[in-house]
Image 1 (tube, rainbow, N blue to C red):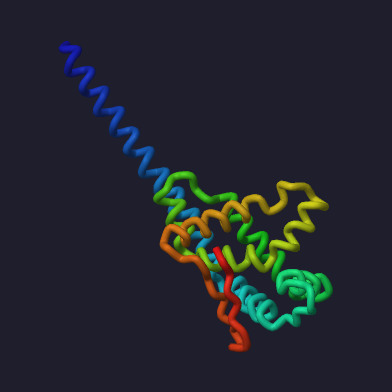
Image 2: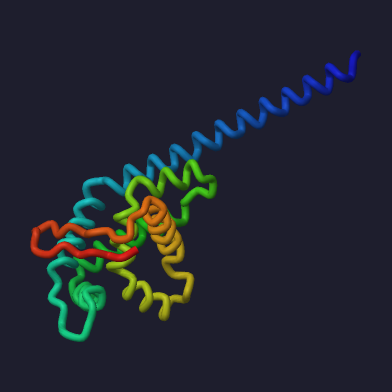
Length: 177
């Protein structure tokens, strides 16, 4: 038996196996991201986000404080709003923890809704900082990783600011990136 042919067959077999593994990984990541997308844009999560945005844009901001702090104080006393915020935190932390490492998949996840992750991070950052002081510095790290990746993506596209449009058309809120 010619060993050169045998080596060639082994090499082609190895290349084929790697190609199959790559396709399986591609399918795995695609399915995982598609399931997340279905959850993130389900009626319940979308409705919750809209209501959070509405409350955030309409919150009364006392003199000497920021909108984020005023919102944090509001949702600490408003149980339905707090539950909606915590559901969004859990969802975004979950996608952040599942954010793929390989650029084709990572970019796809980030391109779906970068503004949403950034809006929610900016809105909830004071609350997250408080929770980190209580629960440890790791709390919501995956969400932070997602928000920073989204911010980096928008900056690469040349955006310097994003605008949260008030669902009730009272006051749009601009966030610097």
